[in-house]
Image 1 (cartoon, one colour):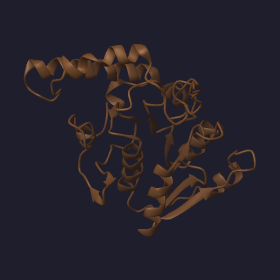
Image 2 (cartoon, rainbow, N blue to C red; image 1 turned 30 degrees about the vertical axis):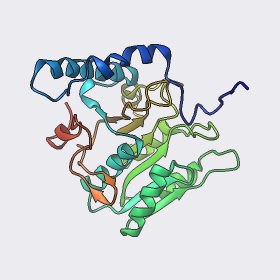
Image 3 (spheres, rainbow, N blue to C red; image 1 turned 120 degrees about the vertical axis):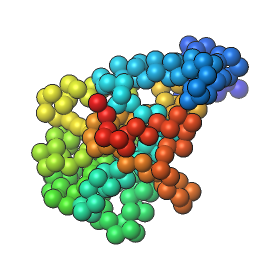
Length: 255
């Protein structure tokens, strides 16, 4: 019986050209990219090349790209960094239909004393922009809204939402995992038009025909990333990867 797979919003098959590209790193180019020797150094060069390719996809600078171990780490780092940057602010705005990586974290933060507003959606899955606008207060530290819904395909008006947040000096985070590679996304074009951001964009690899073991991607403009990740009831000071991607973010942010 032939299998017809229709769940590409959950994860995708690795594209043949991607598989061909990554195979050498399993048995030929397997050095540690952080090592001082040349065997690892050649891998570090490839990592830098990949960073440039991702930056080109997002209309960003290579120095703004961080590879993490997964989407949950990216979302945790984004939100916790905003809260750490503005400790006097105790309010988070999100929606009722966010990915569990966001909703679970917000529920946890509510237990820590943060106030969380989950903006409603209508019967068509569209965000209630009136409620959203009213929810933005001087106490709001960060807004986190998905760009595209993984179940319904509905696109949230991220640029308008980010513009409203920017007018109030609120950090805006979008989980763009379902949008990357499907609709045009350019950080700089939206910033120049006064619409975004973003301060933080998160996207994922395994939903765009790339290896499931390839890390998620975080795009940072502001604030400098605070090195926090909630995982297994512990808070780590560095991304839990060999590359220690977030290390330089604690020293004044990105160029």
